[in-house]
Every structure is written in C-alpha cells, then in structure tokens.
Amino acid sequence: MRILLIFVIMILLFGCINQQQIEKNKVKSPEPSVISNQPQNDLAPSENNLSDESNSIAKIETENWQPGTGNRMLDTGNSSGPLPTAQGSMPRVYFFYSPYCNASQAIWPEIERLEGKYNNSVVFRKYSVTNSGDLGEYNKFAIEYNLSNRVVPIVYFKNETLIGRFEINDSLENLIKETISN
Image 1 (cartoon, rainbow, N blue to C red):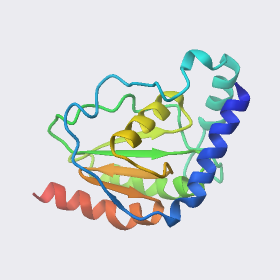
Image 2: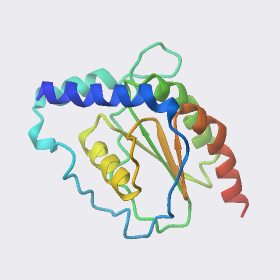
Image 3: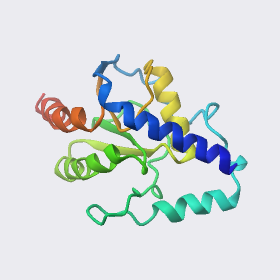
C-alpha cells in the first residue's frame, strides 16, 4: 500500500509541476444531479484498503501546516467531505490541492484570504487529493467536466475552471465579485 501511496503522490507532483502550461478551461454549468451528495469512489482506492499505518503517517505529516512556517504540508485533516449538490443559496468555490505541491502552498494564503473576505457570500470547499475520499471526488469532478490534465491546484467556481496558482490568483476574486454583484 505504501507503494500505491508513493505512486499517487508522484503523479500529483508531476501534475503540479506541469500546471503552469495549462490554459483556462471553460466548462458547462453543473446540473444538480452532476455533483451528488454521495461520493462514487470507484476511481480512488478505498479507505478500507489502506493500512492504518499509512493513514496515520499521512495524517501526522499533514496536520501541522501553517502559512509562513516553512512546513511543506497543508492541513488535510479537515476534509470538506463529498461534493454537495448545486442546490443552495450561496455559490460554491471548489478548491482541489495537494499538500506536497509548491503551487498549492503558494495559493493557500490567497484562498484563505478570499474565504475570510467573502464568507457571508460564498461557500469554500477544500479537497486534498492525497486523501482517498477527496481524491475520489476530484476524479469524479475531472470526469464530469472532461478535464484532460488532472493537476493541482485547481478551482471550480460557477462555470469556470481555474488551473494553477497564477490563474487562480488573477481571476478568482474577480469571478466572485461578479457573481455576488448580480
């Protein structure tokens, strides 16, 4: 199982490295049935297949991240859970990241700032792709929206997919402002 975990991490790292070459993808608006309350984790390893030792190692490595501390790990202990339905009164920002990705670490403070600034207008959902449940949600999301390059960091908001720290940093706040002003 450790080999599988290492393999997944390597794939995520290489995806993160290549993220700067990808351009913005337009995607269709989600239908309420597209993002379900119940995750379908067919594409992700089952939590039951991971040994207790590998789960505890991942949790220990990731539970202490704080911005600006030099620690390379983001907090993955507080998963946002399954993707909720598109129904609801407030728009949602879906942020997929890896705690091992420098670009994810670089954009994390901006996501936190926007979450604090717009917490009364927008719901922020964060998913670590190193968590098997969140990885299942990421895979489901990538299939539903035909994302050919599965990289992190990636943000989905309304009908836009923002890939990479530069695009997220340049565009996300403007998209939020446009949405809440309408």
